[in-house]
Length: 271
Image (cartoon, rainbow, N blue to C red; front, side):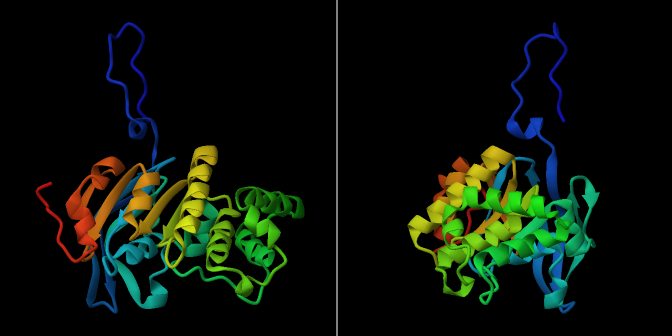
């Protein structure tokens, strides 16, 4: 971490947020192959600083989900692998770490499509997320109350079968299930998919509150660039499995070529 200069050393440039905080996640020239032949992600390098919300933008098929699964080591179930490069979490190489170990270390992923257990109640789904840390009854109760503080809708529906809740409520269950493990870094994959705009905004407001109140870092893969860049500090743009743009949220939001990318255009690499 950058330290302030000693007194009497003269004026100094005010350090940025990123200079004052440690890098919690780093991908270094990562390449992902499926079935040892299909190149899905190529030469991807990115970082998340502790306490940041970082957007990972790109059209459908750009490689966003694959990138997140490479970080959380969930590729093997789809016959994928990190063929080149390395991934670091809190300074440790996690390229080959088991997913369960990563959860216990504070890195969790919320998969695209919510993936709730429809036949279990909302609260039973949330409890499952806590099992990796083997909490005591008291810790589990405190964890549930913490989730309900952020997601009051879930407290109202806690006894309901999750399969009978709305899409927005199921997304909240999926996020709450990840958060009950007290992660330091959450990978969110398309949290707005199929949801009404007001529900999307409600979910992102909760993400922002968790980031602000508890310092939880987020890497959010999204096609909805407007809402994501409104809440993120920085972002990366993926196209055909490669990072083709990066910058502050304000810089990316101002670029017309990035908006056109979602309509079938190409990115202006000179920008």
